Length: 324
Figure 1 (cartoon, rainbow, N blue to C red):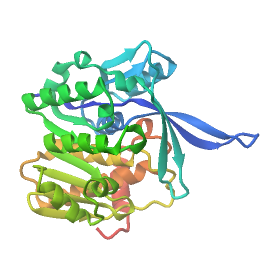
Figure 2: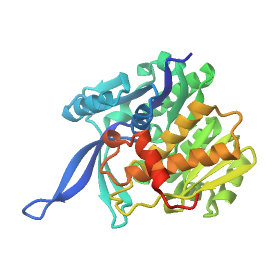
Figure 3: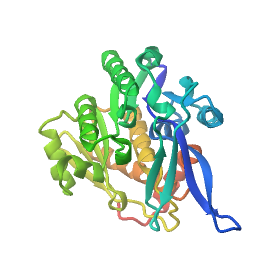
Figure 4: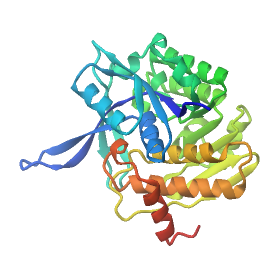
C-alpha cells in the first residue's frame, strides 16, 4: 500500500488575478496561490486523496504564504524547498470578456526553476501510486534535470505517470524547446491530459481525433484525455473514443485552473477504478465528473483555495439539463 495517492512536481507561484478597480480607476489585483501541479493536488485532496508536492519557492513573504496555502489544503509539503537568492515566481492573469485568460510571468529566473536533482526526495515518489508533472519544470536547468530524475524514480517504482503539457509559450526560449520537452513527456507517460490548443501545436490539426491518432503512431499513450473548452472533452483508450459534453455556466468568471481541476477529477477516478479495465461507461462517467468539476471552478476566482467538493460537482451533474 503506497503512502500517497499522487505526488506531483513542478511550479508553485503567485497568480495575481483581476479583482475590480480602485476608487482611482486602477485595476485591483488579488493574490492567489497557483501553479498547475499544486492545483491538481488541491483538487485531489478535496476528493479525499493523499497527496504530496515537490517544488521550490523563494524565501520571501510570497513563498511563506504559498507554503501555508498548500499545507492548508492537506498536501504534504515536506519536499517544498526554499531558495535564498531567487524570488518566488509571479504570474499576472489577464481575463478576457469570455472568461478565458492570458498569463504574464515574472520568472527570469523564478524560484520554481531552481529545484535541483539532489533536492528531490525520491522516497516520496517511491511511495506514490501516481506521479504527475507538466513542462514548466522543464523550461530551464536545473529543474529540468530534477524533473527527469523524478520521472526515472517513478518509472522504477512502478507508479503510473501522469502528464499535462500545460504549454505556456512565453516561458520558453524557443517553441522548439517546448516541443522537445512535450515529446519527452509523451514518451514516458501512462496518462496524458492535453488541451485542444496543445494537440494543434503538436500535430497542426484541429481535428483532435486525427491529432491523437498521429501521436499514437509515435508514442504509446495508454490513456489520453483531450480537453476542448466549451466543446467538452474526449477520452482515447484501447481503441475506444468517448465524448462528454461540457457544463456551460452563466456565471463563468475565469477559466484559471479548469484544466487542472479536470485532470485531478480524472486521476481520482483512476485511483478508484484502476486503469486496466475501463469500459466506455467508465470513461463517460469519468469525463462527465471531470467536466462538471472544471465547470464549477470557472465560477470562482483563483483555483487552489477554492476547489469544489464532490457534493458540489455531483449536484451540478444532477441539476444540469445537458444531454448526457
